[in-house]
Each structure stands twice: as C-alpha cells, then as structure tokens.
Length: 247
Image (cartoon, rainbow, N blue to C red; front, top):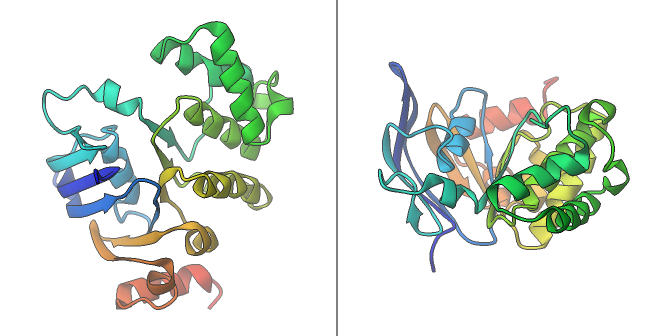
C-alpha cells in the first residue's frame, strides 16, 4: 500500500540553524497523526515541508507515492490533494465566508460558479457555519473563521489534511468547536497530520502521536504509550509541563 505521506532523512536549515535533523516517518491513508512538542522543536517546519511551503535542505518527501522533492515534480498538482489549515485563518477579508470557500475551487480546480457554490455551502454546513455564509471574516469569531478555513480546504477534496496548531490563536471557549469538526473528519476517515498542543484531542483522536524535540523525533507510537506512558525523559518532562502547568 502506498503511504499517504513518506518522509526520508529530512533536514532543514535556516541559515546555520538546523531546524530538522534527519526526520524519517510515514503516515498511512486514513490515519490521524498528531505531532506534539515544545515551541521551536521543528513541528511546524516539518508540516510546511510536507507540502513544500518550506523547501527541505536535504531529504525526500512523498505524497501518495509522488516525490515532491524531485526537481521535476509538479508541486501545484500534488498540492491539490493536500488541504492545509494554519494558526491564522488567512481568509480574504473582502470576501464573504461563502466566497472564501468558492474562490480556490474556481481558480485552482476550474469549477464553475454554481458547482463551486454548491460544494462551498455543503462544506460550510459540514463545519457548522452554514448560517454565516454571507458574513465577512471581520464579522466572525476566531472559531468561526477557523471553521470557514477548514471548509475552504475540504472543498478542494483533499486526500490529506495538514493542521498547524489550528486552535492556538483561539479563545479557550472556541477551541472545542474546531476540535469537534476535526474529530468528525477523523471519524469519516480523513488522513490528517496535526501539529497541536491539545493533548486531550491527541489522546482521544490520534492513531499515532509523534513527540518532537530539538529537530528530531524522540518518540512515535500509540497515544496510550507516548502520552500515557512515555519512555523518554524529554517526553515526560514536556507532558508534565503541559498537563500540569501550575506544578
């Protein structure tokens, strides 16, 4: 079976700073993999390398068996199969929620206006903001904006969804709405690679948890092992700080 994502010996430098130090891992179709770790551990850089928003210094990245790091690769074609949701919502402020979900369908996939609108409405309904289709981003809460951003990614029919700390910019009471949408996607079998600080979500929803620190993967396994019974001191220290911040 072809891996949904395969990363081989991935290195990334920013100047003299080596942020990723030889990452190897795979994601299988239908898997939910959560990447956890302290700030600066390379999590977001890893995610951005998966769809070539950052170009790796060395190593290979494959999506559905196609090598994105091949100099002759059609990056745009490969990216059409990958949806990405960022910390910041990156919505066009001058477009309504509906228009935000339609625009890439029309420009990238070449869908007609009617088809794009039908698919946009379906996905806004799916993420629970159908009634906000005519609202502009400035009229929406952070949680609503993030759900529109998820609908926008889903409207492109991706095989793989990448989430880069999708709840970190949200007020605490809005986090649950976004995580509920992500849980639903997982239940439907969407392949997901999620960088997150939400340990409850990682424990309940992920098939695998990857703990990164210092640009390397320290642990990779089932949530019950990595979060519930970590084998490395670095993992234990990180989880203690996250789960017991007052301690």
